[in-house]
Length: 303
Image (cartoon, rainbow, N blue to C red):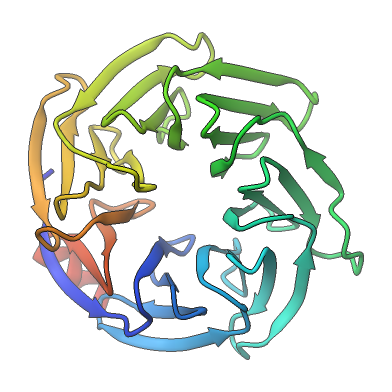
């Protein structure tokens, strides 16, 4: 993946637990161990807003489809819905019995879906005043490590070595046994495959419908950390953070390391998020976030 470091954000919020682009990639969110959530324009290295309200580390966040709201979750066992412009919490949702590790909006941002160390996935009606979840998915036998939501599927990864696809329309559940604890699972851009980061220092590619393994990518180390993986916007490269401070990029077809991006040697790159429609990504390691892309990409976005 032919990109270079364009910007480095010194987030000043302790260790950054997760970094996420918003829906169109114009902004990014950083989740801090200092209990705060921050909104940035990464192209200008500009902090736009700080959201304070969690009682412990913020572990994940997601912007709504119109960028008017943010949902975040943390080690205080809560899920918070925020108003972006005012910075105030609109709803504080409690139901999980342990750290809430991951959270996403559905496509219309009417439902927030959260996963926790308590092995449960909870669905929350954002528009209702009710504080109880509208659905609780209790199929996992270990912690939920990741959630991704499409127009009709909820994809979850769990440390019980399984990924699960819940069909929202039919209510069906498809479970695939991966054989190793799952650190994260995400769909490719075309929706045909699932990229699964595993705790045995491998990222694996599976066919979404058949469950057949199509590729295996190694050479990096994840240690005991929840290191994120994914795919670039062209579905050409598999991406993963690593404990050595590098982002690994594999050619999806050849399953060979195409490049390594140096974030911070010796510091765990725990979070990565590819740009939704351009050849760029953000990564988090320790207290810093880096924006990767081509210089002309930065020029076009700043104008």
